[in-house]
Structure formats: structure tokens, C-alpha cells
Image 1 (tube, helix red, strand yellow):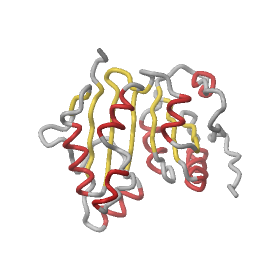
Image 2 (cartoon, one colour; image 1 turned 90 degrees about the horizontal axis):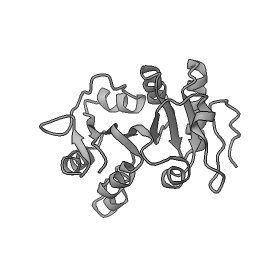
Image 3 (cartoon, helix red, strand yellow; image 1 turned 180 degrees about the vertical axis):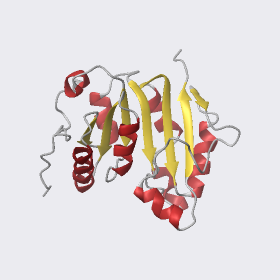
Length: 207
């Protein structure tokens, strides 16, 4: 049984319900940013505070994480973040209009480290191509991982992904990204001497 989430930052949307009207949700017409897998929200709060002109949709499937994220948002007094508990594709298809996202963020998704499981990874060429239709021209795409193989894989395919321009040439990744918050999860690996792989691309003009 799910723990109820009564936070004003939480949107109790369910699959099959009408699409959300973001101008009504946020009471403004600011561009949208989507974080897929917000975890417990420490990154979300930092990023939303850094970009007050963006309306952040923090998406996660785990109820406890959504509750912790909401508590952080409410404590920070942020008005430009809403949290949704939903599966990413179903939610995006239902509630995100084409060319409406100014930013997409995916931090430390499950790396599925075993070779036979890597086809289950969320971020691949097909998923990025899917996301691109919802992104505005010049929209930011950020990916971060603590898993070396995953970081090199995403940096590699993004360098030739149609419709995106690499912002971290020549290698396509960095281990430090200025202006990009470090989550508590990332800090755990940094404190162990492990590196984070950051990837940043811009969506180019749609044809």
C-alpha cells in the first residue's frame, strides 16, 4: 500500500487521466524541464533553484522517493517544481507536448551492469530519439552516471545521434560539469574516489 502524499508539490496524476495543463499547474507559461528519475530530490531542489525561469517536472516511479523529493521542495519553498509518480514513457506520451521541453535531465539510472542485461538500460539511441520529439530547438540534454561503461557508451552514441550537438568536445563527457549540482548519490561515489561521467548536448533545429 502506498503512503499518501499530501504535499502541494505533488501531482497525483494517474495513467488514463486527462493530460495536465502546465500553464495552469504552474500558473505561468515558463518553459518546461523534465527530470527522469528524481530519486530523493536533492539534485532537483538545487537545479530548480538555479533555474527559476524553468518549470521542473520531477518524475519517479518510487513513492518513497517522491515523498522525500516533495519534502525537500516544500522546505526550500520552491514554486517551480512538481513531482509526478509515473512510468516515464506513458507519462510523457500523455502529458508532454511535442517541442515543449527546454531541458531533459537523467542522473544515474540503473546501469544494468551485467552484459546480458545492458539492453534494459533506459538511455540508448532509441530512447534519446524518442525524447527529441518533445524537446525544443536548443534544449539541453544532460546525462550523468557513476558507471564507467555506461558513461562511455552514452558519450559515444550521443556524438553521432542525429539532431544533437555535443557541448563537451572532444571526448563528449566530463568528470566535472560547472553549474551542474552534485547529488548525494553522486557524492557517495566521489567520496570513494570514483568519477562521475557527465554528458551534455543541445537539441538542434527540428527539420
